Image 1 (cartoon, rainbow, N blue to C red):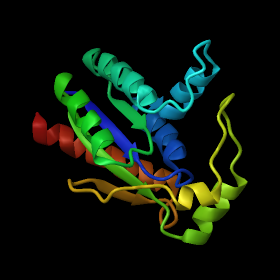
Image 2 (cartoon, rainbow, N blue to C red):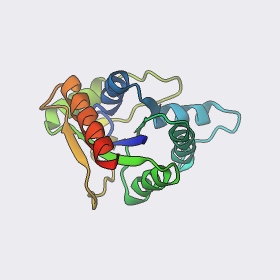
Image 3 (spheres, one colour):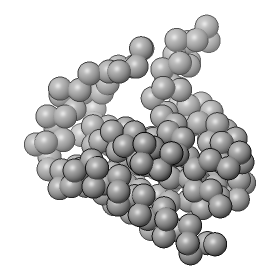
Image 4 (tube, rainbow, N blue to C red):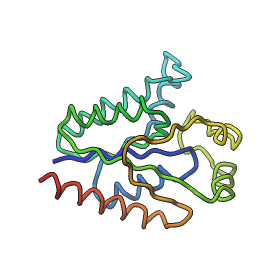
Length: 174
């Protein structure tokens, strides 16, 4: 049984760093919406803003990998119920288990410093300002999700916590 890990959280909380560490730990495929959206912007179509195109493309790639038997980590802000439902549908179509994970940075000063000093590692990706991040819409969760806090726990500990939850989910399903 495959697992789709949906990492959610505001920009600068550490999602990508956690995802990379988790991918190395579990050998899961890491899919990052920023990479897809930057490619859409660089394309001849010059799609910007990407609106739902990045999420829909990522969901298709995630589904393909799940159907091939790979665990998948999707790395997105995932701020609203509609986007969260997309990952539930993707997992369902691929007969995979879904593990929702919200990555937070509860120390506002640390979060702000991360955002303000962050450099883009993707061609064409402009990282948001602290003002944009702090004003971003992020709906309250209505379903269960695992929460990891990168200002309280190390990246390695956060990744290990998620990996442990993946194994627990796998043992319960199988």
